[in-house]
Image (cartoon, rainbow, N blue to C red; front, side, top):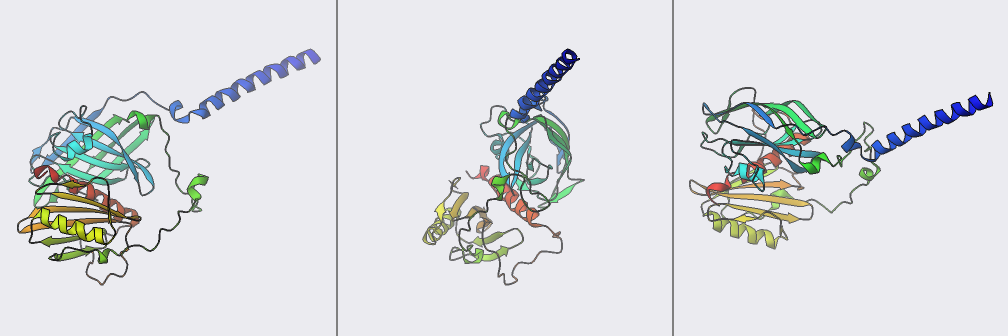
Length: 341
């Protein structure tokens, strides 16, 4: 009996050890253990502008910086092959890849927080369609992503018509296939699943008031759009003059240059930072002078005097929706540069 008992214990221990090492080996690299072979990119459906259908043939994925605390990707649908482009999303925005649709998407649930429409049949290129396009059947697992995007019918954009209804599948970039998600979602109790996420960020001081930005002296038709945290105004002077004066005034107020500044004769992008606050300023030609849009981040929008009220067509939005809209509009504004840069 002792011999049988010892042999049984030895066999049991061997099985348990093997199981332990298998589990441990899998735990060391959980992401790679779940990877599927890269799928062949596939794209089908319609992308229509003013009744003309664009032949979108290619779909690819770019990494995107986290948005609203969530990991994100950029989906790029194009007519021309983006394989040789150094930055496909930017080339697509500038119309270098033919008609294109560029979507910024949260990796967890597929929520779209950025949408740029570039269609050869539309007079207005690179406009934003925040809140008008929806993701369905989104899945991002095993190193691949798939889903469907649709406007649910024809939409109006600046007096022109467009719609999209696409199904897609694509492999993730290698860095995303091999890297686990870096952000844990908060639990119902309000704490993160990761201890590091519980560390509170030290306050950087009082927020800067959006209404105290030093606008150019001849700024007219100023609109403070609190809902999307934007400021718009017009000037009778040309783009370069407005951009230079605005830059000088911001410098006097303590704003520093941020990455991504672009200056052209007929278009300008000014990136400015001060503490945790950021500005992206688009200066573009208008019928008479210039049109300026300021996209703000991390600024104080309290204490409004009622100048800006949501229109009757503005649907209620939560904080994430508002932040998503602001980010999309920034990306959309960049698309208008090809004509003047």
